[in-house]
Image (cartoon, rainbow, N blue to C red):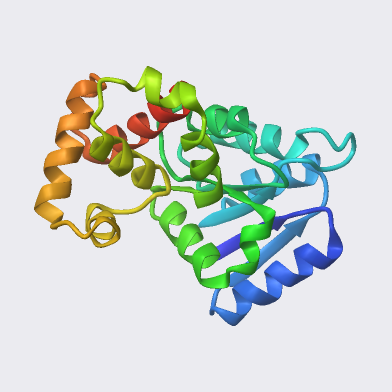
Length: 215
């Protein structure tokens, strides 16, 4: 994959470059500020990009804003956002266009190399990839269970794993259920969430968005 790494901390940026190259991928550019990131995203249009939320010049949310601006220009441009902390708003803003090709990971998860690279590959393929730690925090929020009260406990479990970006097959392995059983659960939860789009990939993104909105 052709990858852009946008991170202002040199050690983390260099570490990600070395990690990705060790997995056989090509880092086509790096960026250390929000404006540099936006320019690289639009000029290079990488297969997938890793973008830090907080970057210079203001160290607020320049990276996130660059990602959102780039996707407005190039819908579906694959981007995985890195954040120091769980910020539900960031994840919700990223997914709001329903286009897929997005991920939201905590920086500490980069150190699990296999998980990180797997997430990048899912995002590059047009899927979603949410950090399990983010999902765990959302699940611990009591309002999630109340607002998604129409779903069964099993359906909520399936939706949480779907939010991580797992396929039906992978969810089945995690829950020790057959792929056909997971397919039935996803069809049921799509119906309960009012997601009747014929595009199953799009419905998965919309279901994750509904999950984040209600968590």
